[in-house]
Image (cartoon, rainbow, N blue to C red; front, side, top):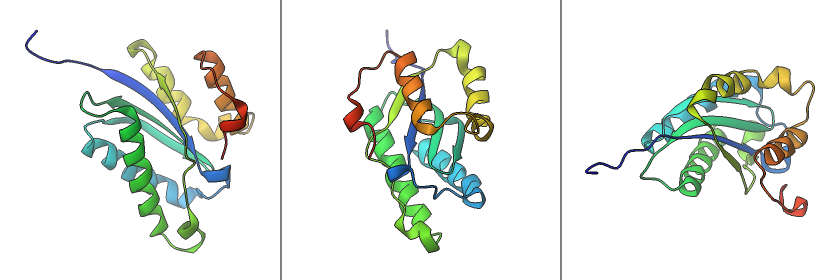
Length: 150
């Protein structure tokens, strides 16, 4: 085959360090737009981004030219630098060290988009910690609970 072709749909989740509720509603749309710009520059276009006060969800197409860990590092670094320019308490903003990333089949894209779009309603019923543990269980990811949160 003369070409290298791929479409790796990835649902990425990471939280604010210590999950402190820094992501206030006025800054979220700008954060999402900025993160989408970073992802585009990394050849990994965003399909949906949404956040609540303490974490973010990203559905994107992972570039064949970027390792997942490098992409997430770039998104975290650039968005963290950007959000600190917003002043006030946001000058102390940091993302957690880790992340969750889960494969998505093409047939589930609409469902995942909807799930990401409805984060505020979802988190009226389920905490971020419980949500993340559910993802790990559903995707059969083994983990040590001592090292999931920072």
